Image (cartoon, rainbow, N blue to C red; front, side, top):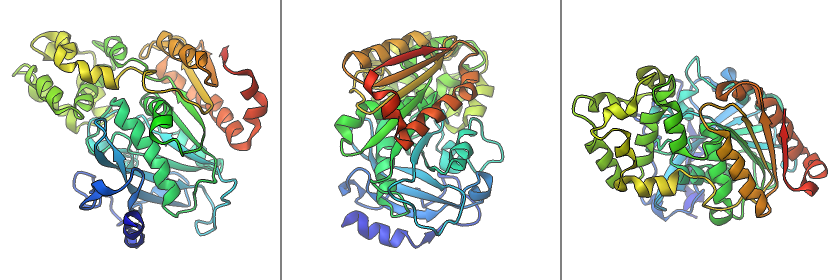
Length: 402
């Protein structure tokens, strides 16, 4: 009753012509007493403002605000944006056939205004090419702001919850997708992090969701590994928003982390709270992030931070995916070491998961974003059209290297 009443009134909402940043847009707020709603309940639906339909070759675009659960298992909320494929936006969806993809953009930021629901209005958005490609195939595509209202970049638990609840919300929103549509997840890098955590948490948190498959590109299996891999290198700017995103879910750890910043470097480090991925990469490129802290990088792994690292940053400890999984990564990935991914896949396979692991010998992390996408699309297509079961399901885990 709670969700139905809210949705009835929210359905009258239409997005304005000019997008407003989430930090200033009153639409981005859960209603009073939202805590009593169930995860996935829909609070608001509106036609997305701006001109996203033309920008991404979509027939209609909707924003959906829904109830989710944070890393401490407290009520929270998040937003997803549903893109309808090209065609007549008024036509009813073929409920039994229309593929429904939740695509997880690697927005990698601790800034709420860098969330996809707003970021995608910008004239140039990095790493967005898979969205129009998926729509062109006739897939309905949901793009959640899975980091939530605190932009908790790399916080695995809250990200996984938000992904799963975004699927629930789209199915409940009455926009043409329901539980009969084949549903799958796809993410790369930071988006792969969210996809993998959703796959791990699925059985315990949202077991009623029938996920046909999950495609995971270059997952961040061990966040601390990435931290050391990129420090003092061009992508060192991933570290400040990651640390701020992790601790945003844990007030005591956040207070400790900020207290260990040197007075002369504190403002520059905390500027990551209002920076997009591109801005953070530019601001911190090549720097030793340990130099911002009194005790160097040792401060980041102090006892006050152990709970955060233990609960949020190591994949493979929160559950086992029971849907088919496709994992792909460059062997020479310089950001996320492939050995961690191989160990994760081995553990999943040992307990009965069905995994296809594609290892690619050409290129690195950024190159694999484009190079690995066609394989992911082929795999997702087999999931949606039912040919996957004939090709892979009977043989358990498969590992390929090309």
